[in-house]
Length: 374
Ligand code: UD1
Image (cartoon, rainbow, N blue to C red; front, side, top):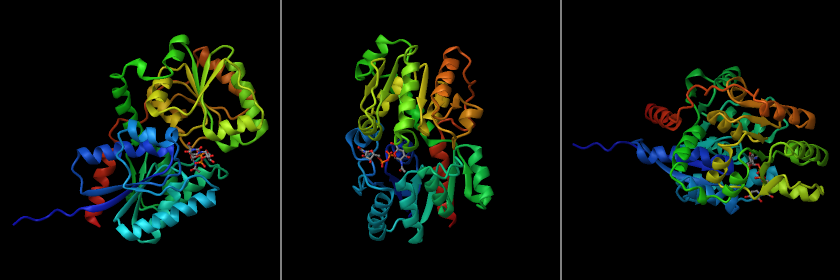
């Protein structure tokens, strides 16, 4: 007699740009491996522009979402509330057994709350990270999501310590490495087979054998005219010795115009870049100056020096073992660190434990066992 193996319905949630590179390797692994999951992809539509969303689906080989909630921009409350309302509707209709959320954006928080209140299990991928800075919207999202999740998948050991200190059960915490690094390695391999002409920034690379890459979008850096002006001043000074390329996030672009700031010619600005175009740029950079979370980790994984324009990081392994230096937004400190990197005395490099391209498989194997045991 044939027995039909039980399968579980899983919703995988993605909302904003930094989520897409985390769900891509999980979906790839689900398609290749044999796991007891029937999954549906939910795109909340927190990011919706072609450059902030669609191009990532294409390049990262993510299938079209089964549900698109089309929430768009708004205040934090508005955006979170819209995701909650629309996500609840589809959860009630489709009744998943498990909801997987990744990262720390508003969609992560909104969907974990909805699932939990409907009695659906929640798996949080990239759990346990803490910056200690509660003024960061992402820190609130991380703390709330972790306070109600059932399964915690952790990228670095600091995350395990935080979750234990917050009273989570040891057997619900899994140190598995980093899905974003699974994706990074996959895309680096793909890049080897692409012609340089595939990229618009190739001309910049050819003209500038040594260059730096800048990204900035954090409200604490770009919403205050003084802070943003100070950062632009520091970048301008760095660009006198190292040409910079700066793909500009929509929030930053709007504020540069609003505050009447000028970017000099030694800093080439572009629209937000696709994943592959950005990877092709930063992997060969002399340094990256950023306030992103994920880029601190991707530069560590590839051994590229990273200067982080924030006062803290929720990813301390990138400083302890990787290539990252935390300098804040003070112009003099930014310039001094850039000079240090240029003089060759930047951070030493060691690839963090389990950042080996196999995190997605570990996660799905843990979740398969957990669902079967439940
Ligand atoms: C969000 C995440 C942040 C992540 C960042 C990456 C939260 C709290 N923040 O911040 O963790 O690092 O994404 O980009 O979830 N906009 C567009 N097109 C889009 C999306 C946004 O033009 O597709 C504009 C809107 O004017 C919007 C602004 O960018 O007001 C900011 O977008 P929003 O999603 O609110 O937050 P991010 O700053 O992108």
